[in-house]
Image (cartoon, rainbow, N blue to C red):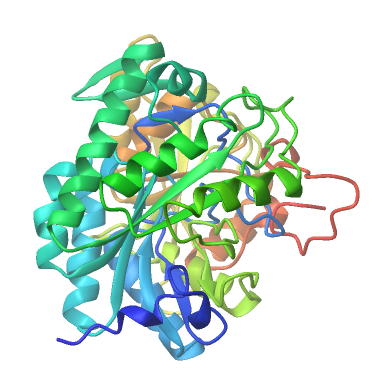
Length: 424
């Protein structure tokens, strides 16, 4: 197998106008909480890690990739970069990489990770010829790291403050060493956060260069509302240039980073086009696994016409399917909700009750039931509008942004002129 390493547009500036990349959003969970990160917003006009319009299973992701290769044949790289961390979702990540390598043997593969949990998978990454790995290292001093990260979840335990940063930094640096020993090209991202680590990035550069990193991406942090750092201004361009110049003494610089979304496709810097977003929606509407029999959609409704009831208040769920002869939406069942008062067991019972449903539509839902139902393979969609329109849209793989509750959509400013992917 001959992998054309120079074709990677993120690692080679000369390739970025010719070769495209695709990020497959198969990794929703994250194992750390950065104080600058929020993954709940989805505006098509913003490019930043952690944002995706859909989360896909590995097999759904393969359909998306196949469609992308038809529409954007210059794709040279398949990457996994979230919307959480690839190795907080190791089964999904590794299965996806295996599937891509088997179908596209000459494709470049890469992953972007915080580095906390990648160590056990480096040997297989090398076997799969994952040629590029990016680790985001914002500090090598745990005291500074403690200001960047709210918590770290490692080996099923949550750590905070300096202890959390110490564990994370130790794993990051060890992973970098092991990646280089395995022959993997390694890029380090360091996010410049004014007043937090802007005077420390040079020390990061010196250390990662010592450990064999190939290229450094010093990029300005992206100010995001509803985060701990929402009141910190983005660093001025002059400061970013100064840091890039200083760190270039240790490593080559990547200066064309577009802070790509977790579902980015095409040439770096281009916004996903409407066709690809439609293919992403189609992929998400497919069964998560082959042979999986989930022909129905559950709805929480007061009167059976509108999606207008909160998940936690529902006493019964309406079950919709399609008429096999004419494809029309039909009501096939009504199922009682488990009795309240049993905490998580209530939602586990509901996941079992709705085990043949691919999605549940409601007017509101808490984090705990959503997490349990998602784990059971059921997407929870908070919508408002006519039941039949929403159910039909899901079966057809349509974009349902127009049915999303306004409180679920982030308005990124009155000047935004987006196309409905999250902005007015």
